[in-house]
Image (cartoon, rainbow over all chains, first blue to last red; front, top):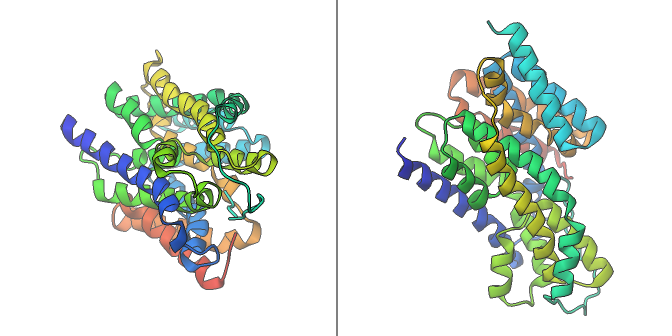
Length: 101
Length: 241
């Protein structure tokens, strides 16, 4: 992929991110706290994240499964993202060294 | 994270934008330089491992400035990146900012848009939570929102650049682990999203459908379809968080 296409993709993602940040502020009057749309936005992230992790684990096999489990467990126990990243990365690397030829 | 839109400040509290609140926000958010810096470094390492250049990598963190959206889109990266699924994934993972923005309008809706719109560029989940708490104590002050956002942004953007430049050779098992960084990054968010037994069924559905879509259709659509099915199940059951 050429550089300008990569930059265009980043610009598009940046535009979407800022549009969401500013859009909620600008369109506040249109959204009810107890409305269906607001409830959907509250419920969606967890389901999306689980789907993403499950697909990634499926694609990467055991190193992915072990790395993600390690990250979740350490995050659960410590509430520290840096510790969870480190544990997940280390566990995935160790699993890859043992299981992947 | 669970979000409840509540207006807990006095109705007659007039929103302000003060220098004092800005510096108070900067000081209180200083630890985020380290924590966001660590996360940003992970992202920088991951960007280098897929062969992205330094400038596009740094731009990703400056322009998109969203850990979840960046991790998810990085996980979807391919020799020809699927731009439309990536944009949809970015919308899906960052849609919570619509709610956060709506809440901030309750606090700062009377301030001029030319003040608020630039500040919102650096809006993060943590700076919103800190601003909500500060507004209860000191009244709504957008200076605090900007001040709290700055160390978080410096940590994230600077961490990405540092991580990219780290003298780590990514091959063998380290390369496998580096390719898994987006999944590990998103996995760390799961405990925050867990809401006890009500999460079991929709999460099981999301994971199962995502694996099936990844296997039978295309990996780039797995998160969107799986997440949509799980969310639809939650909505149909009347769940809320």
